[in-house]
Amino acid sequence: MVFVDESGDHGLEPCDPAYPVFVLAFCIIRKSDYIDVITPAVQRFKFKHFGHDLAVLHEHEIKKAKGEFAFLLNPAKREIFFPDLNALMEATPMTLVAVVIRKDKLKEQYHKPGNPYHLALEYGLERVSKWLHTQNQTGKLTPLICESRGRKEDDELELEFRRVAPRITGFDIRFSDKRANLPGLQIADLVARPIGRHVMNPAQENRAYAILEPKFRRGSGGQINGYGLKIFP
Image (cartoon, rainbow, N blue to C red; front, side, top):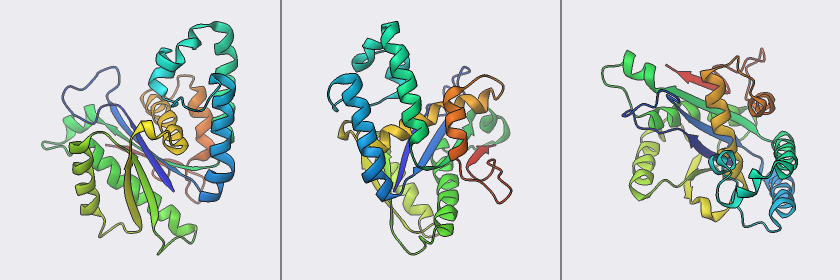
């Protein structure tokens, strides 16, 4: 299964100077790991911190301590929550592919820049497809589960997916709202922004990215760039 989520605005106007990137993260997860490892681990985490598993893990709300995560304003609870969250992500078995579109550079270098989401989708699917081929998944249909962004946006994305589908085959695209509470989409949500922050400022300490770095798809020489991480332009 491949769970897909984003960070940043895919529009080119306006371009936020504080975060001029669009990130699309692809979390590739074996179905057996999803059933036996990830889903129960996420549920255990939620029962520990919320007393139920209805809460949806959302990076923006966690960062802002909003909604279900208002309890993080309590320093004592924060000190327990974040190490547990880091441990959950560290123990999550997955292979990671991410595409980062530098929107500021895209506008500078191209007279007619493409849609950042569509560019990221194509670059990401190319790399996910190649990884699946190495895992003897060629000829099998892999669910590609994207977070729903609204009917119009979903229709546009599905149209773009159909455009690249003749060249990059083997995926079955599906859309799901955050309220469906899928552990895989929540993992993808937590992944995307730390990658964007790392690309913008690689020298800055980034504990979340350090946890994710070993999970990236790699080339034969162990390299991430161009394999598990595509930065464009």
